[in-house]
Image (tube, rainbow, N blue to C red; front, side):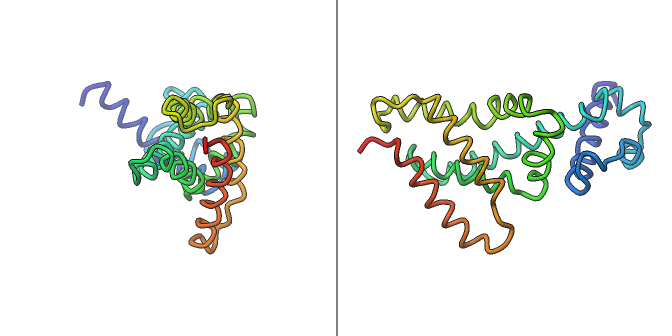
Length: 194
């Protein structure tokens, strides 16, 4: 096996195992030794690939954000209508952020582990960036009221979605999904040209 392939294989294994540990135990109760042992590598190999525990966490956070982005895209693609894609994508974020292997890492640990500013930066570069592009397109297509500032609209919706995600109950999801869907429709509907 070539060196690059071996490195990729080790990195992938470490990310998968670390994500499981961060999900089950939370950042502060995760041991790099246990991750290394389960991946059948030395602790030094973990440091070689990720520098430290926080570096490993950041890499895992990136995989979480990528998974959520795919979930948003999947949900939004259920409609061909650009406006419906906005509401479906917003609901997709709330549901995706609450997936078992995402919630604790993205919503609970990340703001504390990497700090609020770094967490907001990561959010802006990932789901918020995609949301901004979609909102800009809606404005160009004439869906939005004329005087709306798309950047402020993006911040408003993103902040509300993070709060919805944090307060998403774990039971009776069928009914709550309907309620959250209606709430999102009313929230974004205020920006729509009548």
